[in-house]
Length: 92
Image (cartoon, rainbow, N blue to C red; front, side, top):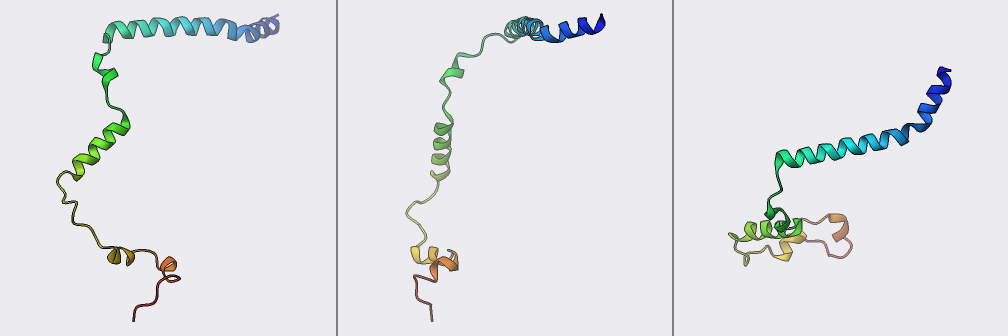
């Protein structure tokens, strides 16, 4: 008799578990909303991640002199030698 009872409980478990979990989640979310209150209205007006990144980059370069750059000849010296040896003559 116990095996038949356990088989019935096992087969009907999703039909019982889902409504119970739904009610517990609904009560929990309502309780949390009551305890915390409504979210601040500025949460919807926040900047996106890309806008925040652009603002940070602008602040980083605000104090730099953008006219002083490294010449291309100096930059080539730091490139991998395997790539440049094919197209550039050797220095003597």
